[in-house]
Image (cartoon, rainbow, N blue to C red; front, top):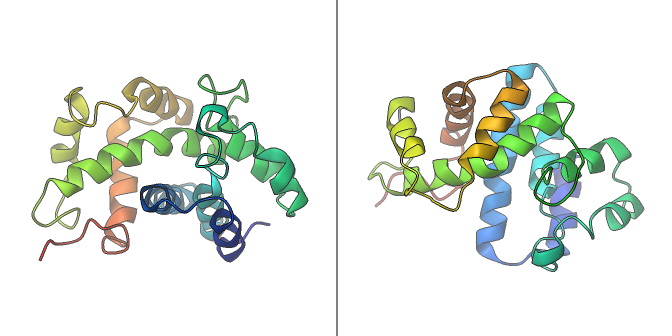
Length: 187
């Protein structure tokens, strides 16, 4: 089973850009929150979340095409690789998210971008963010316009949950890591 320390070692081999590492951390934390919600192994889900963009910096136009073989060689399981590949469903491949882990990763990859952007707009960052404030930003298609809201909604439907409920879980988890995610109180 993939552990967080191993995921960090692997991502360090392929990813150096600070914004991509920050994105990996955001997804990692959100996955931890959803693992707790579903009663799953938090560290395992966090590790998969952290590793999800393994080949993105090196192959942005061929994202996920260069993921499976090197991760398999590094000892990542087929189940974990499939979860990582499934976050590219309909965009990069046809690996449909089937498990709660896969559906969660598919959803939070884009969702955390909007949460991060909304938190950066606030003096207290994410620390005092309420779900109602986030939902206003979510409904404003011009805000964090590059984040695919239709994909987020699709992922939430797969999970059988409302966007506000998934976002609430992610925000709660991200509050615990506010400083590490660079969305704490501004000084």
